[in-house]
Every structure is written in structure tokens, then in C-alpha cells.
Image (cartoon, rainbow, N blue to C red; front, side):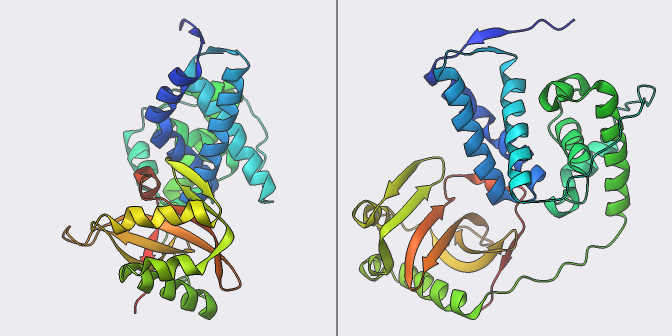
Length: 299
């Protein structure tokens, strides 16, 4: 019998715990949603809900499983909002199915891309990620998902079988393409940034622009957001180029001083006509790169 840990968090204690768990939470949410960008949105929703619970003096049992349960529910809500089809499994008595340690299954799950996970049902996806990617036990998986042991075993068994089948088949993925207007705007933004003409970059942003430096800060309005560019002007460990992250147009950040030109972060920029209305900078969120599908736009 595993002893239950009952604990009342204060906000600093929970924030410290969240900081350590954030990469694991993101990996779960990204694989549930099929996107590292959507995964970060779900993680942020999870953090808000957890902090609200703590502010309400909630007593927490098994805090790590509690956080993953919030993330699991937030991911479910996110999938519903996106109107994705959800496969409902009929719960059958599968308690006699063996639960092999499955090191081969674990390696396969860890190496599988987000696109393959999206071909599993929600229940299968959740069970495989929690057990084979994050290393939770079946009992802990039940705590996170709220499913019975029989249903969790069934989902894990079928999800592993489906991943093995998918891994044996070649993936045919159409290369993403940039809309001509998007490419023109983004190239101008990137060229001005790389030339360090930040006065010209500032001239592109709208008065009501919003900035999120993921995991660091949020700024609103042209006056506040203008200070963000000064931080890039003070350092030289970056160069920008056009690309895609999980099929979405993005600005890729590389360190020109590092060999190989490895992507170290990315930005998402949204426009209203010819003005930038939102910037999301993932420079300080390296966990978002772990499962990301990244490609470069030539030219």
C-alpha cells in the first residue's frame, strides 16, 4: 500500500515544484495535442488552475499525480475545443493482460513523433505517454486519467500495438508551405531583426501588440513591448531564419557561434494587415524543442 501524501502548498512552494516538472508536463501535453505549441498552451492552463487551487488552500494528495491530472483534464478540454474526434473505448475486462516492462515499447514510444501519437485514440495516447514515455506505473496512470485499471491496461495494450504498426509504415507528410503574404511579412521582419534595425522593427508593431516571452514575462502595448527588442540588441548569440514548427510558420533562432546551426528556440508572430499584433518567443523554453518537428524555409 502506497502512503498518501497530504500537503498544503503555498504559492512559492508550488511554483518551485512546477519549475522542475514543467518539461515533463509539456512532453505529456505536447504528445496529447500533437503540437509543442499547443502543448505549451495546455501547460500554462494547467499552471493557472494549480495556482488557483493553492490560493483556495486546497490540500493536495500525491502532488505530482495531482498536477498531471490537471494537465490531463486541460488537454481533454483543449481537444474538445478543437473539435477533434475522440475514440471511445468500450471497457472490457482485460485485467488478465500482462503488463510487460516493455523496454522495447518504451523506446518506441519515446522515439515516436507527435504525428503518430495523434493517430491513437485519446485513451490509448494518454496511457502510452504516461507509462512508456514518462515512466508512471499503471496505478499512477489511473490516478491521472481517472480510468479503471482494466481500462488503463486495455488502452496501453492497444496503444502499444498501434504504435508498433505505425512504426512499420512509412510516413507520407506533405511539406508545409508559406502563404506569399505571410512569407513577405515574415522575411521583412527577419531581415530587419538580423540587420539589428530595431527602430524599423518597432515601427512594424501595433499599438495594442502583446508579447509573451514564454516562461519569463508578458508585456502589452507598444511602449512596453519595445523594450523587448533592446534585450536582443545587447547580445550577439542569435540569428533568425524562416521555418516551420509543427507545420506552423515560425521564426527559428540559432546561435551563429555554435557549429551545426542547431535551433535553440523559435518565435511565432501574428499580424493584422501589416502590423505585428502578437509575438510569442520560445527562446527560454527549451523543452518545447524536444518533440518539435522543425523545418527550414530556403531562401
